[in-house]
Length: 106
Length: 149
Image: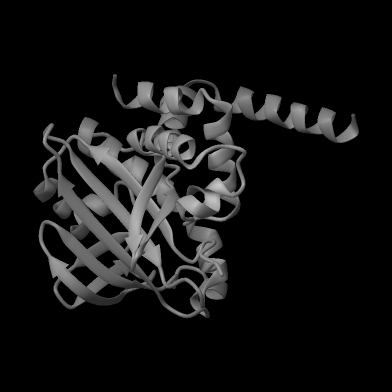
């Protein structure tokens, strides 16, 4: 599996995307904090975090006695640069605007 | 009791197919930095990190260096002198960690912290800020070409 495969695999799961959203709201959190927001065993959350760490999207850092989990958006950015920037940024931006507008008014 | 770490500590990391020495040169030599760091001319020595505009005329955020350990670790202050509003905020800190991996790649991690006194800077360097720099650095070292603007 190459780097991009790991990122797509990590993102291909609703629980893991939910974990990323929680970290986006507030970065640098412990396993216990993340676990408290999910209906899932500690072991389950650990397993999902592990997949996110393998993909490099979550980076664990020790701070004193705690292990904090940080969102690292760079691997997603690299996919953006590889698959979006180069080809179709203008068209994608137009579509994103359109989607946004329709959802606002809908 | 949880600590509010939102945006006050930011972590960015990327695997690069390059040696630690190549990465060290790319982050400390202005001939490299102009090609991926928003055009900034950045020269780093044991005492100072000098950051200038592409023409060398404006100081974009020169600061002191706290740790200088080539090619593995660099710690320096951060000041956003390139923008008047951000420049008024308290200085923060940037740590570069360069760790060779068993597969021949190198893991580069940038930690931007002590941002408690610089909320606007924190906002500004998140989003595309550091991501653009690291993505551009990886592309430059691996392909020899800068990212297209």
